[in-house]
Length: 378
Ligand code: ZN
Image 1 (cartoon, rainbow, N blue to C red):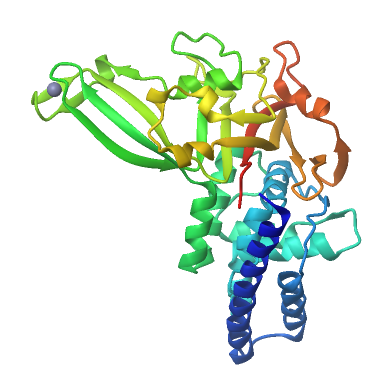
Image 2 (image 1 turned 135 degrees about the vertical axis):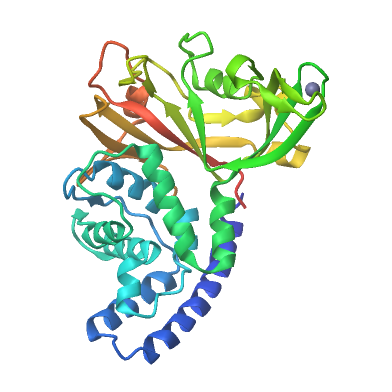
């Protein structure tokens, strides 16, 4: 992955981005409701799109009332140059009301503010109001994994350009092959399914704590016996029978989100947080983690399964009273930053490692979402 090829790719994207913006400009001109203020904003936006070499600056986001989870996720989205490369190409919505309601457009405006302002942090107000219009509650504690999916789906739905929607899907989608084998007649079915995050259990089937991230990944792809209440209907046997369910990894995306399921339900139905120590590596090779039986991919696909850690969304506190922050390694500067709402500071890998967790430190920061980036991007 030479620097040169990266630049070429970027300039290709910029060409396309310009044509998208031209289309948007035509819409804007035909819209009589357009105000002078928004016109200048669109002009500034075109400047962002047209910049030759963009550095993703580390700028904070003010907490506007329990928005630490939203802020952390926005930083994870906006520090990802693969994501912003897609975001910059969206068609600017024609009317003011459509602009107010467009999550991708509001994200782009926020990115513009972060890159062109001189402030150490900006207020994500317009985006927050936009999310309110989409029935998202503000000023409440969110689960970062759920909120990530909600945001991702809103952005995807509102991009409107099929080519961009596909690019966004490709950037985040994990493909697996699910196998179901009847344990009485050996009848086998398989189907392809996809997901945006890999939800990793931190406990095995006997409720023992898994020790490393690699253990959690292996456990995710272990075959599971479906017996008792979980039995499935077999068309060959004509009745419910025990099945063996297994999953094989077929494709990994550029940006891979791993969700450590630290919040679990207990018998009492209350949510309990698992704070125990679970180390994760900076470099992750899926070929070294999974067995051949756990994969369903050709050699060229598998050769791309080399990852490096890009971000950690960490949670501190209890289930009903907590705080989120994000550790992100800048893709342009290759330095780690801690984004804690409006406070941003450069940190070391040793600081990131502090989010591995500790069973005796219930208020300490624990990694909740891990974002890995494929190494050999073109
Ligand atoms: Zn059967």
